[in-house]
Image 1: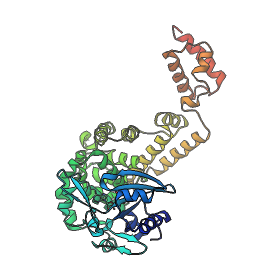
Image 2: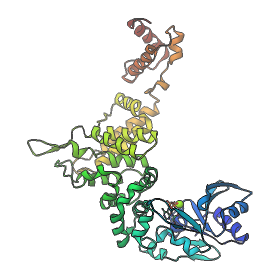
Image 3: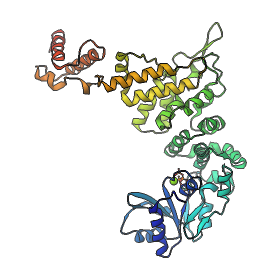
Image 4: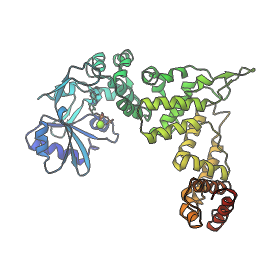
Length: 447
Ligand code: ATP
Ligand code: MG
């Protein structure tokens, strides 16, 4: 348990000193038993929330979910969730319990947890408490429900996606009974809010085992993303491709760094392919305009999942332009930087590299081309070449000072000047730009 922070032990000790039981539980115990860095700390205790608040009165305490027994305590900038031992009952909506009851039994608290590997408890005095064989399942790299999987998934359908998420992130197998229930209960995911689905989906696609999981559990994802089914087994009939559309997608996802927006773009980038498929007289398959179709489907999916506006913009842009060629000239790199921004362009290049990994890479390896493009992007950035209005040597006030009144024309004039600089027709130099503005002004009527 070397990995668990000192703050967590301080919190345990404070609860113990006040006469209560307290254990670290869930992800932190699981991860440290696997020797991977533990994430956030959850503590389970027989103290009631009001008592927890009093014990930590000298610290910041947030009433995260006090009705359900959860209080967040902030010790030296670290948030620790402290939840009272509880049982749950009456899940009429496959979403949340109709009621929770506090209990004095640690074992009962463990019984309501989702998977055996998440139901292991630890404190330095009592050692490990493992009522449901979680350690053995970690050893065997296995995800297994605590109790009857169909019942547990019926209680809270999010657990279905969590099972698949842990399998992806930890590289574990889902145990056969639990796996059967994952498929038989998958439709219940329809009852789960898009926000909860999205939070799990993001973690799932950033997992080390994502390729295998996307292929094995496609039908589960299809409950909230039915668009994915058309990709399964779709033969591309093109010598650029050795995989069907779904296999290609899975390889592309796996080949991107685990940045959620980038991986999601990779997951969505070719969903339009089955809808744009044509076959020429030589029997070769083509997908003209599939970027646009994938973009439209991605917009629908992301809207349904209620992603934030920033993520929506970034992901849909990556999907839409993943197949648009990018030339390796300074001018076209400046143009691309203007269109996508620095972060966007770098992610787009990552997506293109991953897309190529999922093709017939042996015969059509584009790594060298993309390396050159990357060097050119770095060069343009390093030289601080101008590609945005922010960098332009004149701004609106400069043009107004030279006698142009504030007007829509003024905005257009700045855009034109920026275009000229990006195209290399004029230097990004104040005097030269003001002179060019004067000429433009004479051309425009009414200014
Ligand atoms: P990580 O934080 O690394 O994603 P975690 O296991 O800590 O993994 P959390 O979502 O933080 O996952 O939940 C903390 C613990 O609460 C879990 O380990 C599990 O014991 C329990 N838990 C969380 N969600 C559920 C659920 N939907 N049903 C039952 N138990 C749950
Ligand atoms: Mg956690």
